[in-house]
Amino acid sequence: MQSSFWKLHGKQALIIFAIISVVIAGVIGKVSASPDVEQYLSKVVPEAASFKKLDDRASDDLYLFAALDSNGAQIAYVTSGQGIGYAGPMTVVVAWSNEGVILAMDVPQTNDTPAWYGRLAANDYFSQFIGRSYQDPLQLNEDINAISGATRSSTGVDTGVRAGRLILSEQLGNPYPVPPEPVNFGLAEVFFIAGIVSVFALRMVPALRKIHVLRYLSLLIGLAVFGIWLSIPLSLVNFIVFPTGFAPTWQSNLLLYLMVFGIIGAALAFGKNLWCFWMCPFSAIQEGLNFIGGGRTRPITRTQLAMRNTRYVILWVIVVLVLVFQSPPMAVFEPWNTIFSLKGALDQWLLVIATLGVSLFIHDFWCHYLCPVGATMDIILKIRKGTIGLVRKFSSR
Image (cartoon, rainbow, N blue to C red; front, top):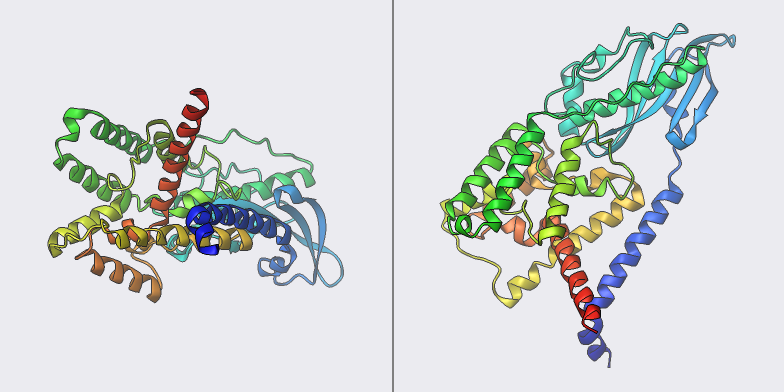
């Protein structure tokens, strides 16, 4: 009886269980989240004997404190603001003089991985803020130089500082006007738009579909642009930051929005995955190694096709963990984050070596069996197919 039920309804039961568990994980994460910024204040004003909260906008994770000496006299202001980096929110704590000049700053909480965030300290990014007044614009790429290869982390810190400046300026009786956030549109966005349009043509125009070498050319361009130059392949964390509420503003991270919603939009509108096997730089590396190794193993047998479901298990586990702990960095584990940044822990490098080694003999091993991005795109395509089927079913009645 149980065996018969599992054969008939096992797939549906697993899907329902996965959806319910993800919803429960999200609720647990939101309910248990309780920021305590006061523990970070002494890092930027170590000489303070105590701190007094002056103002807060808890809904925006924005706080203002007075740093007091042993006699109760105010020696500085401290703001705690939130910015959005590569993998989610970061807490930016800034010490200001009583006149509103930046004395020190710290980022005690960040979801960005060391491979990206570490570049800020290594390139003296934070020192650009020291000595600046709350009346200075503090605008990224105009007053503050972003760090190449860590643009999103740079943006997150700058946003956190400017958020603190807003609440401080009101306290000082001289509210700082909020300037419109400039749209960050440049070569990276141009390359992506050109890339997705080109791949769309290669997949939809019959004459171009017959020229197989064009797919390899597309992969090589993706490797050069999104892997080597920008080091921003499409990762699971790029998807997760949206439903978890950790996404940055579209003005400061337009490329992220173009990549995520451009790829998802194309999949929903045309039923085509324009990223995997066409633009993904890690896929390009795997196919190159597969050519060198001479391997022709593809997931065609029943067992091999069943093993592809491993991707969905990995995706489910990561999403549940991210939601429960409200920590998007848990989704940053794919080997390309290590190989393109050339920075990573021992276990991350071991994953890179193992994946690339197996790719010599198994065609696109990571893509077929382990990639959560591929699993995400397959789910989107399945939802599209199922929706179209339901519409046709009900419209034919």
